[in-house]
Amino acid sequence: MTDVFVARAEEFDGDARLAVEHGPIQILVFRHAGRFYAFENRCAHSGGPVAEGTVLGRVEAVLGPDMTCLGERFSTDELHLVCPWHGWEYDLETGEYAGDRSVRINRFDVVERDGAVYVRA
Amino acid sequence: MTQSDLVREAISGTRPGFDSRQHLANARKQAVERNYADILIVDADAHHYENDSLGEIAKYIEDPVIRHRAQGTDKYGKAQSLSMEYNQNQSVAGRIVRYPKRRQEVGDPGVPRDVSIVRRQMESIGIDYQVQFPTPMLHLGMHPDPQIETALSWAYTRWLTEEILPHDDRIMTLVYLPFTDPDASLRAVETFGSRPGVVGFMVTGARYKAVHDNAYMKVYRAIEERDLPIAFHASSYPHERMFEGMNKFLSAHALGFTFYNMVHLTNCVINGLPERFPSLKWIWMESGLAWIPFMMQRLDNEYSMRTSEAPLLKMKPSEYMRRNFYYTTQPIEDGNLEALELTMRMVNAESQLLFASDYPHWDFNLPSTIYDLPFLSMDAKRNILGENARRIFHLETT
Image: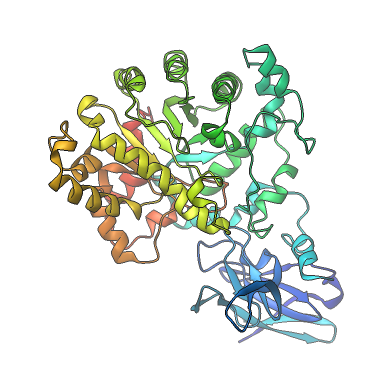
C-alpha cells in the first residue's frame, strides 16, 4: 500500500472529480457531504466510467402495515454512485452493486494530510 | 439541497458540455486491449436523433400540408408537431447522462453534426461499419394518421441518403419502410434500394397490421429480388392496452421490445413466409436473445398438434427460425452464461447472429459482450462481430 497524491484539498470544489492514474487503472476522487471517496473508474458491468456518475439516495418503496404501497422515497442512509453508461448503482460506502451485493467496484481509502489528499492504493 | 437536486448537479463531474469521445474513453481502452483493429466489427443497429435535424428533413416532405405541419411546434414548443412521443424514462431520471447532455455535443467543421458524432462513437467503440436508424421515428407505426409515417420516412430517407451517408461509406442504413402503407413501402424499396449506403430495409415493430397480409407480398418479393434483408426493429408502445397497468419503464420495455416481434415472427413463420420467399433474409432486431428459445419451443409444440393450421410449413417452426431468420445481439441477456450458450446453439449463432450496439441508447452493448464470452471460438466471435453482417449486407470490405 502506498499513498498516491491526488490534489490539494481545496481543489475539491463542488462536485469536482479528480483523477489519478495508478498503474493501469484510473482512480477518481471526490468529496460528498464533507467526506472523500475514491473508486476505480471502471464499472463492474460493462467497464463504464462509474466514478463520474451521479450520487443520490437509494430509492426505497414505502409499504404500509397492510402491505399496500404508499409510494417511494430517497434513502437518507444509503447513497448510491450511479454509472453514467447504463445506470448500475453502487453503495457509496462499500462499493457493492445494488442489484447483487456480491458484485462490487474497487473502492479506495482516502487520506487527508497537511492539506493534501492521497488515495491508499 | 434535496436529493432530486443532486441528480441535476452531479452530472459527469467537472466535465463541461458533452463529447462522445470522453464519454466512451473506457470503451476505447477496451478496443485497444482486445485489438479490435484486427477484427471486422459491424454494428447492425445503432441510432442517431433525427429529431435534431427535422428542419433539414422537412424540406423533402412531398405533401405541402404535412410539410407545413413539420414546421410547426407541439404544445411544448418543440419543432416536431408530427412525431409520436411518450412520457418515457430512458435516462433513468437523468442517471444515464447521455440523454440530458447529448445536445451539448458540437460537431466538426465541414460535415453534418450527425456524421461527426457517429464517427466519434464508432472510432471510440472500435466499430468499422455501422447501420444507423432514427430514434423518435421508431414510434410512427402507431401514429393515428398513416400518412405521417409515409411522409416522414420518405423525407428522412432522402435526407439520410442524400445529405448524410455520402460523407462516409462506413455509415449505412436499412431503409425505414412505412409499413402502414404497402404501396408506399414498395415505392421506398424501388426508389432507395440501390442507393449507396443502403444495405436493406427496416420495419418498426410496434404496429398492428399482420405481416402476412396479402398486401405485403409484393414488398417481400421486391426485397428478395434485391437480395437484401428485411429487419423488424423492436419498439414499444406504452399505450398498448395490455401494458397500460405497467407503472415502470423497466416493465413495459422488457415486454414491449419483445412482444411485437413475437407477434410478427409468429405470423411470419406460421403463415409460411419463409417458404413463399425462400431467399429472403429476415432480421429480428433489438429484442435480445432470451425470447428465441421460448418461441422455438412454444411454436414447435403447438405446430406438432396442429399442422393443418400451418399448411405451408415443410419443417418445424424452429428450423425456419435458425435457417431463414437472423438476430441481433443487443440487449444481450448475459446474466446466466449457461442459458446464453444454449441460446446461441439453438439459433445457430455462428451464422445467424449479428452484433449490435444500439448506441447511444440506454441499454447499449459494446463488442466485448461478444468478444469476452468464454464459450465461443475465435471464429464464432469473428462471425458474430462482423463476418455474418459482411455476408448479409454485401459489404465490400478489405
